[in-house]
Length: 454
Image (tube, rainbow, N blue to C red):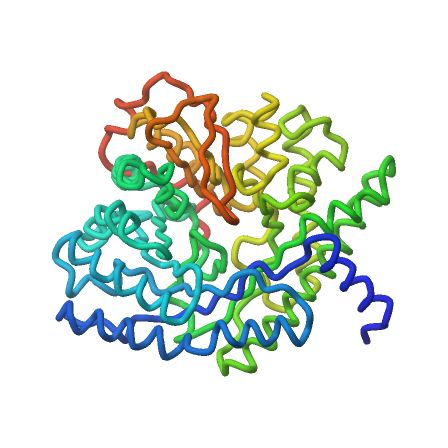
């Protein structure tokens, strides 16, 4: 039973500590839309999305009002479009027509993002995969709500270096295509290793082929709540610190479980998972960096940062997993630079570098996220950074991702403005020594020996 104290405590978290349900994401399978006729394919896609998601936004708003729980975003994830469009799309331009259709459907049902303009190429690329990847710069430049992702590696298959090399070029081309908006298109493009099938968070969300025809996934977030809780155990030992994080994560996740159950029941769609991630925003007091500093760091990036983040990530999962029967997605602590005011302040202060962020990705729930770099950075250097991050994911059997934004026309010392939840970011320096000969090798980095566990 929930007692009145717990109700009051949750209300306080919502009103004063930025507790929210970050997203209700409706996953929609488009496999039954496949058609060899491009015009017919686009019609089927539009009709299915606008039918299945017709009540998503209104249902989310109703739950928000009835329970007093802020639900920040209502979103859609779909089957990777490289799979759906393979029979009809013979060129990158053909895939762009699907991007426009998805954008139109997203606007019609009122969601802010639709994820799944994606390709899964961890071992090799089909012609359809390659055409979709090559279409990404134009697709993101010509749409508002499309999010794109490419999975280029996994613990089981290794790293597809041909795809890594191509993705470096695509990130740079996307930056050029959207340079009038501080290369904003790159903020909607994620390169993955070990991408999960049920991730509700953008920009990396897509609906895996093992999922149902439709499914509700919910992402919760509460960095401010965890920070406030930790203020009460300053100077205490690690046992009390860990217990506090676990108990708080449990309470936050229960809110997500409640919303997920209600959304599932009202929409008549199966409940999938709760992603119990700590996803920051640029709002004051909603920062993962501030949690790490509350744990005892003078500034994020100082010695001890990786250990503190490892502790936080693990305790969030341990607490949250008790609050829901189905936990999934990414689940843990996000460390995006532009979306976290504490991370931004640390970069400006000089305590947080790209290399330190890479070390932190060994123990966080995702990877190098929302990092602005000089627009002059070469495609091969971007590919090298992607390869490094994919290697961390592959060897450590975890999801890692890269969302780099080479801001065309800007350099270190300047700032890129993205707006809204995407925030702003100082341009971070990148190692200027080259890796062209490395990323230019063809083929695949083999899977690590511990991958053979059939």
